[in-house]
Amino acid sequence: MSKKVLIISSSFRKGGNSDTLSDQFALGAKEAGHQVSKIFLNDKHIGYCRGCGVCNTTHKCVQKDDMAEILEQMLEADVLVFATPIYFYTMNGQMKTFIDRCVPKYEEIRNKDVYFIVAAADSNPANMQKAIEAFRGFTQDCLEGTKEKGIIYGVGAWQIGDIKSSPAMKQAYEAGKNA
Image 1 (cartoon, one colour):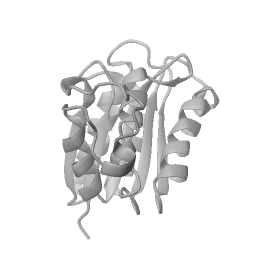
Image 2 (image 1 turned 180 degrees about the vertical axis):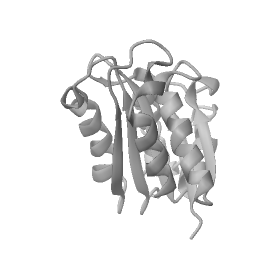
Image 3 (image 1 turned 60 degrees about the vertical axis):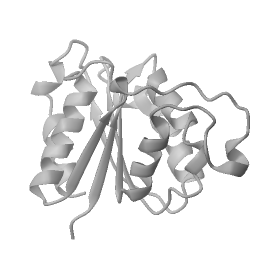
């Protein structure tokens, strides 16, 4: 059965290590017959959540930026893939800002399969668990009915392109193929 896969890439570098892994996931998913869309957050204008609370009743943010469109894509997707570089043991600020801005629709984003893609210079996946736990807090505690389907750890990747010789490339491709 063909699924709608939405990849959210928060790398600041197109072709950066986490972004490259998200492209491998996309390749596998496309080859499996899934419809794949990718959002490169650095190309989008997304302001910080202001904590005003208006969206709690209106389900619309007062800010006029690209987030409303992204939320609609999330609602339509069957599979959500969150890809981030790891900065100081957690997701980068761009991914955290994106998650914070999901408040207007988070109660409607439900029953999704989710994957996490993380890449870091550190060679120990255990050192990425703070990021994974933050993702889980969002997906498992806030998005009803989500199922975590996999984590791709891109380790030992400091410079752009380091990930290309990593086993994580094949893991991302296979995860996409099995999405």
